[in-house]
Image (cartoon, rainbow, N blue to C red; front, side):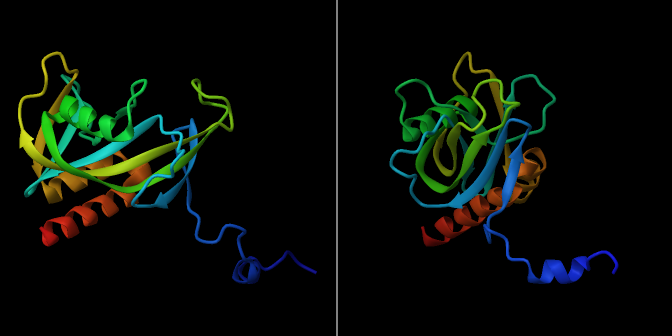
Length: 185
């Protein structure tokens, strides 16, 4: 009697969470993606992300003066701030853009690991991903620690996917959502 045939075992095994794709966000979080158009009412949101577009361009951001790769708008909510207020504030602070609208693409339901210095292991948070559609572009506010770069959409999508590899597939969803919203406008 030899070792078990792994091919046969894999062909018959049914995972307990069929269709669930779990990912690691650094060493600090384990997460599951949920495509959604609305956040659950009592979602414990502590941070969020926004993929910003205006016309034929995407707007990337990074800390001012750094050589970091260009990325999407992201950050934490301030005390008493709603998610909608966060989206508008963070986009303006990091890109100088006033949004015409924002649309939820989905969210990561995250569980803190024992390596997370700010949360107890097992704590749950929700991290939404939005598409932000720009209305007016202005200067980045004085004192903002960010700089922005405007890029053609194809270059922008390559840049942000390279910077945020752990959520690459959901950034693609954001790009597709923007394309659909533009086509409908």
